[in-house]
Length: 543
Image (cartoon, helix red, strand yellow):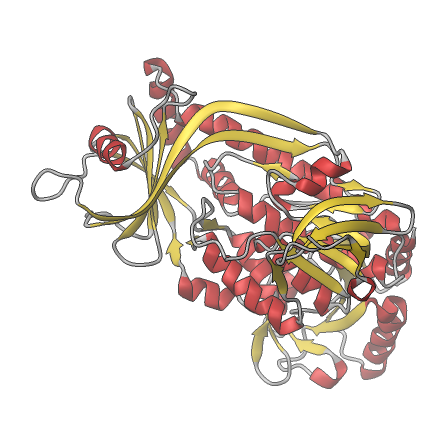
């Protein structure tokens, strides 16, 4: 092995460790904003198997901001409901539609497919993963991070970065080296995972969990017709047998009524089979100085609910714009504290929810199973409760209303979605044709929506728009929305909203302002056109 040397030419502003979906997304977003990034990945080959499979609606909205959601939906399989089977011939339907999103469903799309889409997007921006490159140690000081990398040829290089983002998984070397503690829990539950081809007479637009006395077994359709992911709890502990195809067939026979013409399981091929024990963890902190954690390096969850990859991708989307502003000197390093303040409670909530769901789903106690079936029937018949379940499954339950990076008190009594809420979408006319607000703002930084209501005075509109640009400065774009115009004017960033769809989505009954962050959460909302609140909110970024 070569002696340790300093690779001065490899210095970067941000070193991203781990090129899974989380690392790829954060690297793509940073490079798109002009940040010099180095992205390294220990493994030499792309992973072709994964536990993660379900992509939620909120994650699809994030992918849409990158311009890759349409291809994701084309590659995946739309899931519109969950058919819960408390018994062999009993079905409790839990609908996933009815949510307010451009993507009112969950999507079956394996993690390798998500990673492929993100890697293509990252390459377009110039972020290329260095595979076979492993971080062995790192240390930080007041000015940056020094990392030792083992290169594909075995040589070691010492590189310097201003910031380091750990996306290196549940067994994160960075987290361990940095000494960031965490809460680690063993649920004493083990699961079998398998991808199979099978001729089962089941609708392929929904999940199919069986919850019987023998345990849980879930069939989740894969994008390719006739292919399924099988998830089943199995005995845990050192004496438990290793999952194999015989165990898979036995579990299917015990827990489902499915069988082939000859009485077998109707499985024609097993493409992949694995087993694992459920261990959950949550890092005590997401930031330690110039080191930040994201994805599985910060939190790991039970597979029940399919939340892990989604939470990681949303971590990356939240972190990238903040770190870019700090790196560029446009915001103070304190802005990065809001990353943990906003994202750690989300992971904590998901962790507790998946822990409870795992324990409930895997219970063998007869009384508990009866209560579980009764609760599921009650949920299916109670629209508000069913709606909350759908929001949880599709990851649309998140808000940041308690974050220091939003105005916690609504100004001037503005109604509708407020600071900390995710911005709604709506149809508007941009001068060339009808489009959606999210597409009009795709890839932008902060955006200030100026609701004009029925104001039609050209000079007044010009004054308000100019005042908005002065308040926003170089932080983003100003878009005025008019109820009197059927068509927009792209040169003046004026959107037509004669039918009122956009005003109604924001409950804007008259003149008003709405400042959107780059991740499309609302940071400021007020009635009227007083720009002082906008200036105060942007000034807070520097603190």
